[in-house]
Image (cartoon, rainbow, N blue to C red; front, side):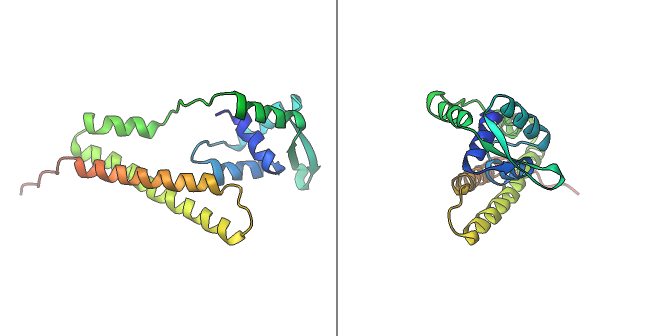
Length: 176
């Protein structure tokens, strides 16, 4: 996934400021992609120079609201329809999970796996809060599918991590 297409996709849903785009990444796409202010603003400038987005309003403190142009909409459609998605992912946690039981002593592997489980539990709570806010707002929730996917993947990850923890050899009882 490219940042440019993620930004185009979010702007296709509705115009937004750079700050709002950052929040949307955090709220809707954090399962797939993280983007910070320092990444989004330069990307908006590039997209503007290529005619894919334009400023449609200027607000307080010179904030700019961006919208997709027809050129941007066509590029987004081309990417969605004509370009096969990259299935390559780089996930540091996945590498650690793969290595931990094979390389670390059971006690250390338990620490590493438990850390990931704790993160998954905390992340699920965040996703559930987002889901509740979307439901309470009523109407259409454009990010509901992404949140639903995140909740489902998170549930599977938690179950898998619990299985991995359970499969570790029991810690020896300390001798006194």
